[in-house]
View (cartoon, rainbow, N blue to C red):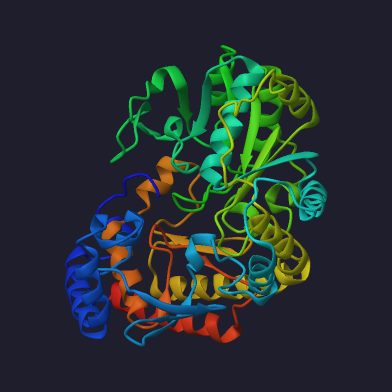
Length: 462
């Protein structure tokens, strides 16, 4: 989910009238080829908001979402018999491929013979803790059921440890549905994020919001010594892909230590950089690290690690007396089935060998998209962050969330996504990201490029 996006404008290189006509054609085709999905959607509208179990599912292109029959690897089949190459992969939840046998077999075997949740640790916990420490260089870990919860718990612990209330986030971020993060900048002023109710959160008391890559603004925000933690991605991924400036991470770490602020690194999307995410690849040293979505073969799960001094302080703060949940955790958190799925993912799937395969194909995709954009003469660019490939409607990469938001366009994206879906290619509905997995093939890449090439040829016109 992201900042409000701009409407179609000539600066994006596309005639708005052309988009309207093309989109109307694609909607007609969609409805002709997805009648069963339409019937099912009409029934689910009686019982679910927007006819879907999660309202985000209504934001796929078209008058209604496709209904899924099954998925395997990167192949997805809908109830109308249409087949797709999936580059969304559950917006990272199925990053390593749908029903990956290295994980699904372990899940099936475990749940049939061992149960799933006993609110007690299993032996797999030992392996998972050791492996997370090896990959991310933080010694102590806790589980959560989502990256949202992991971020929320890290924030709570940071407040407990520092005695401070405020957090700092970057404009255009997405760290899940954590209440205090639902802000953005409007003309330089922090305001509630577009379309999101403040939920009784007094943002001036809880949150500071600045632009990414701005060390001057960061020092000004931290200098009052009232910020418990910075919550950041290593690079921005949800508003569009925003690279980090050289020296920004070193500067952010230096400033956070100078002013007694803890640093929470959210690697939920940037695990695409390798087995240790961006942090492992580039040797970052956060106080907390969060990973969600990708770790358990689609089972809701996340982990958050912490530095030893924070862990020591947390053990002191949660030592009792008596029984207390201390405001974080949950009954199903760290259940035995989830831990077994995480172990299978870490052992069998999230390997350097698989990432090497991913990177070769992702670079092939990026290069192909770049060539097609150049051929079309559209003023766009494409970037690759590890396994993620994404284009934006501006010539050069943005430096912050505001620049990225200005390079988004609802109408262009709706057409591109629906055009691709109608030709058997699924893209992430919230942005233009294509995710490459170990199951992705050269033929999948070729199909994407064939469909994308035809699409932007129509957009560019004569």
